[in-house]
Length: 211
Ligand SMILES: CCCCCCCCCCCCCC(=O)SCCNC(=O)CCNC(=O)[C@H](O)C(C)(C)COP(=O)(O)OP(=O)(O)OC[C@H]1O[C@@H](n2cnc3c(N)ncnc32)[C@H](O)[C@@H]1OP(=O)(O)O
Image (cartoon, rainbow, N blue to C red):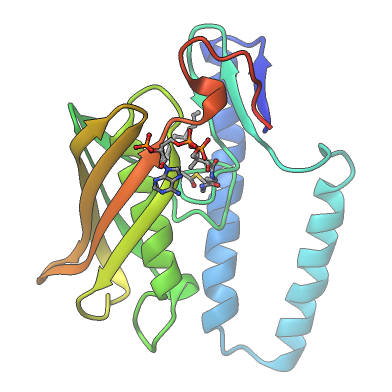
């Protein structure tokens, strides 16, 4: 498991956010435009060549494997490759998750890139979002892992503005039970409950390391 310390200060974190955030946002727009465009064949081929050239340019210098979770000495966490919240991940909507004591919530918009049933959010994407928001609620600091996630899809979730929220129901040793829901403006579309577990390597007195 890749947790990497970065010897950088707040200014450097901000500089990187300002550099990579707009790139990821531009690629998100590209994905949406790729799905919805109706330009002619020549234009599609021209854009394909441009995108391939841009990809090759970025690959001139890159890390091996995934981004991992990076952190600074002063406790800033940079999960920038994360598929839900990652600043550098164009697949991430991305969500901004807010916290208040034992609750977390996020308001966000899912567009064409997240479609399953026509005009509606893919069920796996609903699970992805709820897994993350419930997991975030389960622990403000230590990294809990999803043990079991149970969902009840009450009705199809339309693409567009949505809200996900979660709160701790109870804690039993290393297990935290969390409940939550995904909603649109008409109310709940998916109910969720999850058991989030502190992995062995993060438990008090553990000498094992993340694998
Ligand atoms: C770090 C910063 C990150 C920045 C991002 C922040 C956002 C974070 C949000 C991220 C959110 C997204 C998060 C993600 O995407 S996490 C990624 C998806 N999840 C996984 O990959 C988890 C894989 N599994 C494991 O790592 C382990 O099996 C875990 C850690 C789950 C348990 O470990 P271990 O197997 O060693 O446990 P134990 O033997 O000591 O048992 C302990 C207790 O737990 C009970 N139990 C065991 N398994 C399960 C189960 N599956 N359901 C229910 N209960 C279970 C067990 O009976 C016992 O209870 P009791 O008998 O004592 O009563």
